[in-house]
Image (tube, rainbow over all chains, first blue to last red; front, side, top):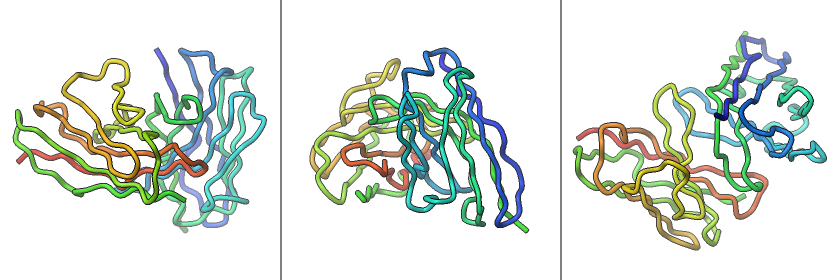
Amino acid sequence: QVQLVESGGGVVQPGGSLRLSCEASGFTFSAYGMHWVRQAPGKGLEWVAFIPYDGSKNYCADSVKGRFTISRDNSKNTLYLQMNSLRAEDTALYKCAKDINNYYFDHWGQGTLVTVSS
Amino acid sequence: EIVMTQSPATLSVSPGERATLSCRASQGISNNLAWYQQKPGQAPRLLLYGASTRATGIPARFSGSGSGTEFTLTISSLQSEDFAVYYCQQYNKWPPWTFGQGTKVEVK
């Protein structure tokens, strides 16, 4: 079955960097676009970034544009999110999600927690 | 950006009763809407897409309707496992893909 397992979260100071990973299994990773979605504590879902199946483009939310970069390594079945210049408002549980036709998300990971605090 | 607004924020329902959740888009999105269920500590689960098509394995008690700007998720007879937070999400115009703020369905 489809499994998405995130890692790389932790506590980081404002202005710092982190790289999140999402290891995929149970499906042909190289055939599907992938997203990052975050959820601040006690809050709703916020889309962060998307990358198509071949990594040819990437899209980011305005709130993270210029600071976050999504990428993928299809040989390793792994999705990444490079997060730079982190702010307190980036504190959230970051989840990766499998895309269907650039439309909706049919499988999600449990998430990895990022806390930005001094 | 298309803003999605869900109501109510919290819905108190007794087991076995019907629950009706609403989602409104700030502009027309045709039927390009998905619904998700999220339980505490769990990943979101896709319930419906195309506003009314149930995802694989989703029970028939979950149904969706609407088009344009107004949408409804109905749970016909609430089971104990249905108490959760529900989110709508539009995919008519992206980026960004946008979610509603969620409706919590709790036990009355």
